[in-house]
Length: 115
Length: 116
Image 1 (cartoon, each protein chain N blue to C red):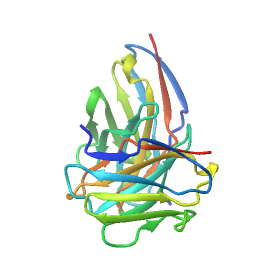
Image 2: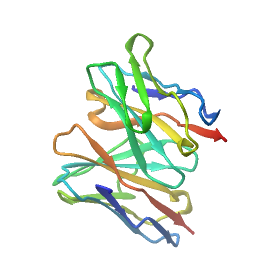
Image 3: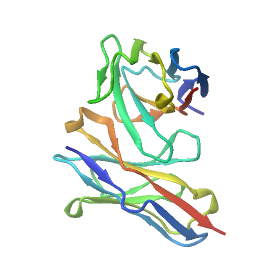
Image 4: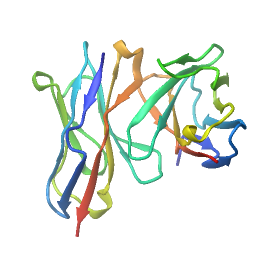
């Protein structure tokens, strides 16, 4: 079964509202998680590295005030898309690094549609 | 900067035929290399990975990949393709230069279609 779970699997929200996506490691504690986004028929682009107990590290070009990341516990990281716009519609995937650092597990992904 | 190139956007093979998906990378240090498979609307499943050691890596579902440092390649192969292998395949690279082995740069993917 899945060792990294994302919720919700899909969400539709109105333009201008905020939406939160959760990423949970189910069988291990993850000090590091990663958030990616994937546009239809395109590759995955790393958005940010989420570190438990500290601020996330954002990739160049990713707006940290728009994509808020909180890694409040060793099993949960959240991505909040603030003031969402239709261009934010995408597939968001998280991954979690196991304690050994040798293995990462990807979540099932979350479809966001902003209307 | 690191990069991954998957030259083939689409590949179609007949069921039972052999398969090779190409992956070339650019990385200024020893790379960690991965192949993932993604079914439509789904997350990613790790097929195999290379960190060090034997350059021929065996993965799940009968896949293997060979790391060739001289060619900066990490091609994925399968001797006999099954219809259920139809999916999108991503090659990825990570390592110390990207802040850690698990912070990945992905290729653009290769869409595999299998003809019955």
